[in-house]
Length: 286
Image 1 (cartoon, rainbow, N blue to C red):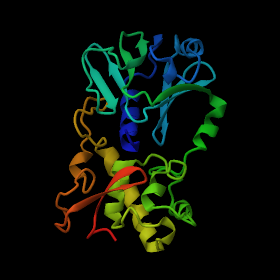
Image 2 (cartoon, one colour; image 1 turned 30 degrees about the vertical axis):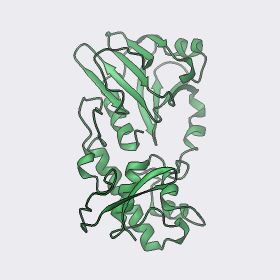
Image 3 (tube, rainbow, N blue to C red; image 1 turned 180 degrees about the horizontal axis):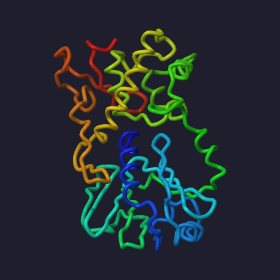
Image 4 (cartoon, rainbow, N blue to C red; image 1 turned 90 degrees about the vertical axis):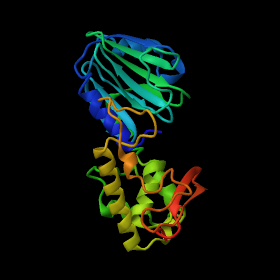
């Protein structure tokens, strides 16, 4: 699943390529991925244009030049946004299926065609993602469902420490809870816990203040660095500037089961926690 750094990379890249372009046509191949009627969706978007792209957590928010609606796009597990023009094929999202020159393909479920003959494809292998038009006045209701977010003004030490009070849940499960902290996923939570020197299966409400401060600082550091490196790549992921995310070169524990820890030369362990494969070092994380 694309996490905060990958979705932010997509937001920045699409902002540089599609804003202000007239949408000539919208094709819906899979109606189950659109949380509106096909008629409403196409009527609102055709002959309109995107004026701004925002993001909260892993949710993309497209502002429209005309009307009282916003477009929400969530890639979930396997969603991709692929921008195609005469000269470029720029993609962001899940790394499978591979982005191909042969577009549209069987995974292209919603297609936006712009006035300059460029197109934006919403591809989704497992079809867990969605697109939805909402009224602008309902934006706050959507944003209220998300917790504090690294890199935003609400990500303060005071707000962060309050989250842990009386939370009888493993540290990793808390960090993955989008209602508490927006945008974190499996990869970055494992890396955050390693940098903080804490086991991901520690009880959240048992952590001391000095340990919470380590988690707070590690979260800020890891997310900022991952955004700067355009996210993490495992195979053929590309951002919308057709560049591979390269935070994968900085991973200390994620995906390294049985390998030697860079810090202590011990072995990286893997367990199942919060429904996710979880990587950590027994020696470095207490």
